[in-house]
Image (cartoon, rainbow, N blue to C red; front, side, top):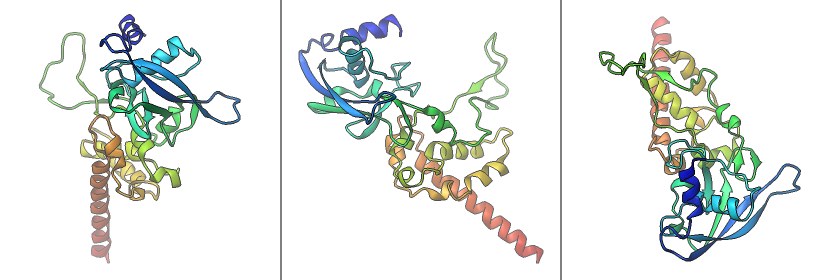
Length: 257
């Protein structure tokens, strides 16, 4: 962690001139434990204290064995996703002041827990099709000249792959083979702008029983998304694409008779 981030965490509760204390109930689980449990910590907070800063204060001042994931501190990396008072959010931008006197922090749901608030994100990425790339080369503004030292522009998608949408999805609870909103939103984005992707294979993958049609259109994933991807709307658009494909195939079959 950078010195700036450590300083900010050390100052939690004093940087804003506040002397307020909030009670945190934090999910704890270590390998070998018979069952998970919550441990309680009283944390000094200020007007601008975030949940991540409070967790770091606990880690530094009360229990160094507390395991958490974080990196950027400004909602860009997606690694600090948790459930706060049973709602999904990024700990680094979730303000403590809005959460009440007692705050419960749990790992995101529907993904196996490794330890404490750390989940196994490999399981999340395995829901994507095998062709899922980390970065796709962009064909946007081909006439533009990239800066010196950069051979080409690269376009980064809005999704930060935090897993919050999968955690919020009520379908995954009863259908764990459902690929989930993040993977389906990615598929719709690729079909919107293929850039050489195998669109037919991708539509076949999305048309499987545990693909786009498994979604119940409850829109909890969109509510949880911190990056305005609107995965539920993208799944509905993906269904429209798949339905158009089915109608075209039916017409072809009818014309061939």
